[in-house]
Image (cartoon, rainbow, N blue to C red; front, side, top):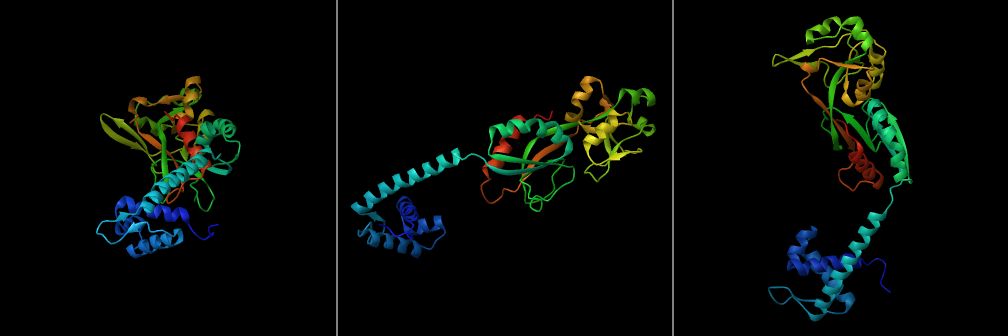
Amino acid sequence: MARLDVNRSGEMEVFVRVVELGGFSAAARAFRMTPSAVSKLVARLEQRLGARLVNRSTRRLQLTPEGVTFYERSVRVLADLDEAERGIAANTSPRGRLRVNASVPFGTHFLLPLAPEFLACHPGVTLDLVLTDEVVNLLEDRTDVAIRSGPLGSSDLVARKLGETRMVIVGAPAYLKRRGTPGKPRDLERHNLLRFGYSRAMEEWPFVERGAEVRVSPSGNAQASNGDALRQLALAGLGLARLAAFQVREDIAAGRLVAVLEDHNPGDTEPVHAVFVGAGGPLPSRVRAFLDFLAARVRLG
């Protein structure tokens, strides 16, 4: 019986590369080893097998009959190992805790409605959803995936873009009846503009007027920590809010909110990414499954 400390598949792989690359030096470069280390490994292999596999007396590496036989069988064994590993990896069901951090609007409009389907597809996964507009440190918070809107800063995280969302300014019909519907960006001076209560990449509202960019700093008597709270304030008739189109699409269609200043909308969008710690190694199957699931179903518009 072979000793347990002999890595026979590793020896086979090195020997096959020696043959296919035509020498010890080329194989050494492929494995980041020294030529002498590769030569010693083949010598140990020959000693264990009790047969010479290569003739070293010529400039070009030459296989012995035993070497040809061992090479051909090694190729088949390594191919079988690769196929076995691929089969196991493909059939491994995602399982374990999956912690996902997302903004309240994205979580409300996408994650919560999609959660039952995802869990039905992957019953071995336990989903832990955290909805907040605060940016968390994935490692410190033990978060697997975070959904982030807007430009991404420099980091070691890996990002997968889910799409882009158009921005729109909305107000409730009752508010517009009371305060009037703005026709130009400067009309916003007499309106109550609802804003976020934390620093965002864009503090001003952009517009286009007569071909030139115009920016307005929102000022009003209320602010909120997340987009869904701003939506609720706008629905209550408190003022105008600038929100992602996916947040208010149904409200506009139902007449609960009205989009304003669309003629001056620059058409700017916010990118939405799923970010995760993935550099330097394969993703856990539960993370990969979740990312693929989102990419196939999220339509931001």
